[in-house]
Length: 272
Image (tube, rainbow, N blue to C red; front, top):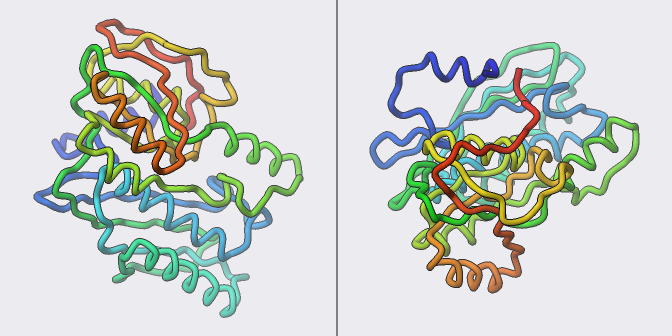
C-alpha cells in the first residue's frame, strides 16, 4: 500500500472515494499543484502554471458531471516573485475560471520557498457521475490519446522544449462529452495517475476485476496527468457513446471488460 492509500484508509468519512466529496447537491474537491513536485518554473510561464493549477482542479468536477461554481485558492509565493509576476498569475487564474463560469471567492496567501497552489473547488450536479457502480459485463474505455504527457515530461527533464499545446502544459477537459454521455455511463473518473493505476483504483473500489480486450503499451498506460476520462458502461450503450464521441471528433478506445476476478494492471506508484 502506498502512503496516499494508507492515509485515505485511516479516514472514516463516508464521503471519501470519488473525485470529489458529495454533500447534499454540492461536490467538494481539492488538489495541490506544487513547484518541483508537479512542475518546474523553468518549464512553463507563470501564466501557464496558474492556468494548469486551475484546470487540474476543475477536472475533478468535470469528471463527476458537475458544474464548478466557486474556487478557494491558497498561494505560497516565493520571495523572488515580482508584482508583475503576481499579476500574471492572478490574471491567468481568473481567465481560466471564467472559461468554466466559476468564480474565485477567496483563499489565503503565504510567503514560502516555492510557488505552490492549493485549490478547493465547490461544484454542483443534478446527475453526478461517480466511481461506484461498475458491474460484470461492463466495458471500460478511455477518451482521447494517452502518452503525450509522460513523453513531454521526459523531454522537459532532459532539458528539451515542448510545445505550448502539449498535454503536459495544457490539459484538455472533456466536459461536453461527459455532459452528453452521462445517461449511458455507469462510472467515470479523470486519468491523473495514469490509465493503469487509475483503472486499478476503479476496479478495487468496486471489488471486481477485468479482462483486457487490447494490449496497451507502457507509454500509454503509465502516462500520468493526462486528464482524459476513464469510463465504464453497459455494452448495449456502446453505440450511443461512440456516436457522441464521433460528433465531438473524440477518440474513444475500448480496452477492457469487467469480470469477476482479481486481475489488475501492473502500475508504477506515482505517490509515496
